[in-house]
Length: 81
Image (cartoon, rainbow, N blue to C red; front, top):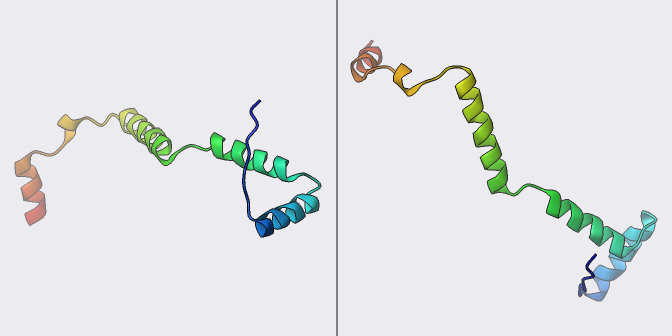
């Protein structure tokens, strides 16, 4: 386990101590819980990649193929109708 040092202004530290006391814990425990949660969250990029994989699987499950697209001529026929 690693130890870290965090510097805070007096007012922020005072408020953090009050919050910790309200929750029957310590400032260190609050910081640890915050950082643990932060480290466990997915980044936006990771979330996008996961969503992209899910969408690709959904498309593949429905049997979509690029060759299923309308021809250029059929597309223009539909637009003018």
